[in-house]
Length: 572
Image 1 (cartoon, one colour):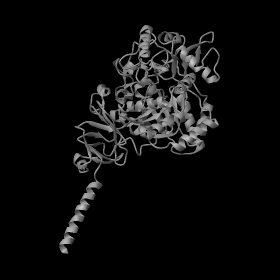
Image 2: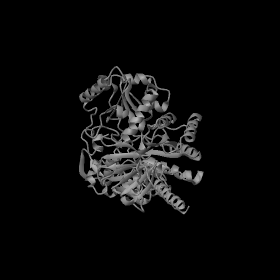
Image 3: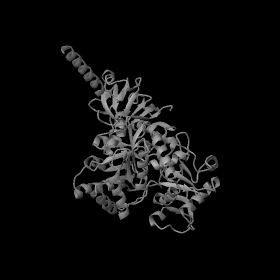
Image 4: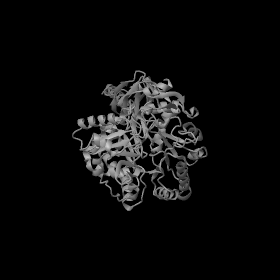
């Protein structure tokens, strides 16, 4: 009997040890790494462990190896640097998906513009021939947005006469289309019904459409395009966009334009298990003013009610205080109208984000945001200003005071005058360090496909160096031009633009991780590699924290993990 008790007791001990082993075992462990956690208390680690979708341990190799069992996947990092997954704070995935499928004439390698018409026609013809089944052809290019320097449909008609051709300006604030595209959209010699749209359809002296559509005028064309696309075509485009973003370590995004129909597409991809970036989605169209119609408010409420997790969430409204075309971005709102709209939407509990390029519109937006707190009372709003390229010195402290998140794109910097539209105005642009010192929260993004590619490491290099670039190819173009070759650093010079506004690598990484996670109300789950947070991370080809500043942009992502699953692996 005593022997039986001893055997039973020994068995109990073995069972307890086995249970303890299972209790502390993880599904996946990463070891032998140089892991930047983003946790200020413990910023570095050698390894981490993942169970399910979450991180359950961070520490030394010895600590992490104790969590292995037979089925544990072990990823040996071989000393590679790991950072939290990149949270791109400002993208347009639907436009990005179209651009991925289309012809890109503005890349880090070269830009082909209207100033080289024969080459442009040749490139488009070749693309059209290789995409003979496409009902509509898409492209992306640098071109002037200021008549009479702007191109017309006749040049595109030379390239493609039998199908609609839609060329997106790199700024995404203008479209250049051929005659067949104008016909598809119903743009004729007669004015379109919406006066806001009509004002932005460029016409010749006889009232004939030129083929250039600016700002709100683009909506006429985009409605026609998306009507022609099947649901499966849209889903395929967004699936490709999602996977493309993963190549750059991007694991979550905020989409800065959209509507209920687009949000429903992300939900459909999630249901199919094909959405590989987490999306927070706004309601808004480029430089189109909001009108609080019953239908719009119903769509907002439906989206907020149905979509509110970290994979597909809504409750966000995007405003444009100015545009992005022409020599100076056009105003879109009167201050009183803007304030009335944001007050009402804030009262209903929506998060507000506002595009502002000009200094005067940034001031207007801050004034309206200040009124929200006074009139609607205090709450955790996380109001956002997108771009904030030009901010007057006296407005800098207001971001921290009003708890306004500044969502910025470092790749938009740095020409000789940053991106200031008034050569007489000496206010510097992209005031990252000043905003940091003022206590403002920075969230970084790409504005993809305005930035091509949406490479966060090129962006981090720009934030750290503020290196000036020039491009002879696009110097002669009038209006907002985001030259792909310049953004890729292909034509950088030895000068730095306002070097005192540089920030450190760690500050830039924080803008792309915890800062952006905070801006999307997800800092409790995303943005750092800590116990209990989602296992979203990127393994890098080099240590960006010790690499020469001028080589950070050459960093490649070797592996991207979202939700504890590998969604991208270099070479696969």
